[in-house]
Image (cartoon, rainbow, N blue to C red; front, side):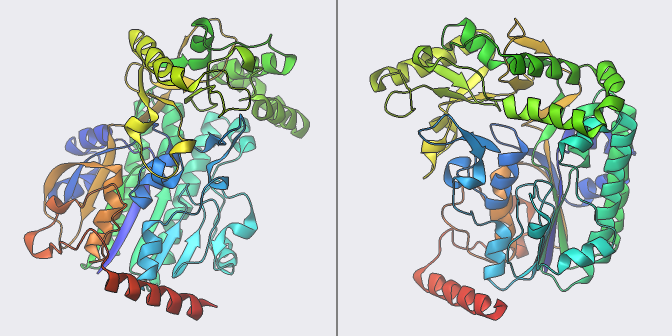
Length: 500
């Protein structure tokens, strides 16, 4: 038995189901007619990181310490990449490796650096160095010989490409990645495969309102899925998932603007750099202006200055901490400036809960949903959790921490993430035809169940037992017995010695 997981970042079940029923996506229609499928509910905040992290671990952010790609360091006002503050979490392929399964992992955004597994790994688009791209290291040479190209993750590419060029480049990368999977990884000896395509997410952000373009994207994926299915044997189960869905980006909530107006946040007058950021962000939201400036932006010096101004200044709002009770992170969470926790905190411990409830109630009055961190998460990393987490929905479709617009809501453009309409498809010999609803935490335990591997008790998801035909139900224990733990340790030691 083998399992292949295909991740389609940002794929939207509403679109797929509609177009499949119209006959425009025949492969997805086949998966719907012969396998299990349904909407996959993502997490809050609905961001690719931590969504992919939660999908591949089966755990909530409080257990893995990942609440966003950038998050606030404990007892500090600094924001860092999440992985610098937590221990490495075990993904589903790590568990399978420990049980002797041969795996390949290709391009998941939550893998910043490739590491040793029982098989092959290629890091995602946020990988900081070519030296960390692959495991084993020799795999990198083979990849480039097959036409591999780094996925789009750099500022220069995003900013300087026209819409037409950006569309073409994403399509080219998708073509190359599917070819590498089909002609290289699928021809290896493997038990479990996991690869991610980012094209849908990127292009839906830009072209959501141009449904003819979006349809072409999904039809291209549909065709490539058909080729994958045709090359797999009858003993292979295919799972197709997304980290979140998509919807129109209608309204952006400016959190710090609101906090400032309500008296929770106090800031100094904007500096020249901060005013420049405001202008840049205005340009980025105006396609015609951006199109006019792109020829100049291709000049390296101007691009470097733009990069510095935007990314070195963003998140560094000149806050007067001694007069601030709450502030927002660069990616939208709210933190209380609490005494004895923050460097210059002013909110006493006995005032903390009352203040949180007050802010959440005031947000509710303007139709913005917000939650206390502990209402959403649990685990050993709760000290890194935001105090208040804002939920994006059909009313508030995006969040921003920027200041200086003189209003608390901006009109949005293009598309943005949606928590409710991600995708789940399962197709294979032991899968029944059934429409279901699943959560992002359910994927990892369901995969372990398929291999008959005990499910770690700390996983938050459930096994989607309703998708299996009765004869395949293994119903393994949800915890490891002492004998199983010893056997697992022996397998891990044997595996590691064998790889040295």
